[in-house]
Image (tube, rainbow, N blue to C red; front, top):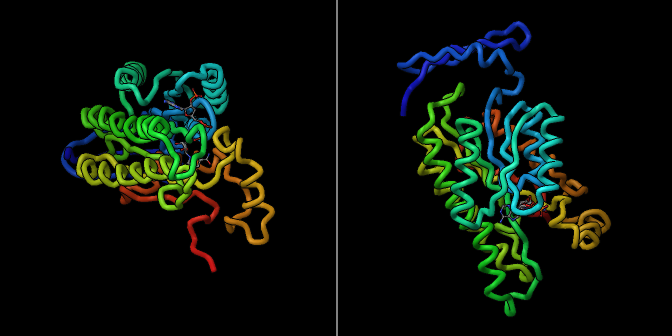
Length: 299
Ligand code: NAP
């Protein structure tokens, strides 16, 4: 990996910052001065499924950090346009890019359009995902649902990551010395068995393994890979089971989460933003539970 010496002056109060490394010298003072507040100066992100829900929350937090965001969506152009307007209002910039992550030609086009627009991809967030249309008992679950979930929630992210990682490998390291970062949005379903949506649990467990695989493969290339594991988040996806989770989270005596509220898309967005701002440069393959404490084993 190319080693760098970065002289990076910024104004955080009266402090001056210096990052130093090895052989080559790159002065990034001008760029950093432009916008250093969040460390995301001029950075670019591709967020899949950013038109609604968690993806929109992620795009918005990245925008608050001054990032340019490619807002990918599958079919809801109206929601994507709304997300883009919010991103711009929050101080970021970006564009909408339609594409079904399950379709190879769409993945290639999404990456090509993002690179054409931004010149590079500093952050990929594999967020797009679907739940089964019908929750079916494990003994009755059908192949059609299995194939759909596998294609959108696992095969799509895998091959999209492959494409984006190859793009990142061509990029010069950024001001922090990274060629890129990748975040996969999994679920508590990685380890919590729901026997009426086993297909969802199995593909999310696969996505967790995918995080480890890419983390190992890319660590030496200046690309860190992370998994964010959301709990129950209020979005369209959970709209149909609102009463069930209201009871489990808010009304039951103890509640399934120690922090007794629904998660918000912003909760996940803030975690992605922290990664994008390089708060975890010495972590890769790490799992962040953003779940109100659901993962605790309690007695
Ligand atoms: P959501 O509100 O239903 O939004 C789904 C997003 O994904 C939309 O932007 C949608 O685009 C996009 N999308 C769907 N299929 C796509 C495809 N084939 N190609 C590209 N984009 C596609 O879902 P959400 O709750 O925000 O969930 C986002 C991610 O978080 C999913 O991976 C989900 O499994 C995970 N998650 C959610 C929860 C939760 O409680 N909500 C918990 C854990 C994990 P359109 O608007 O164009 O349809």
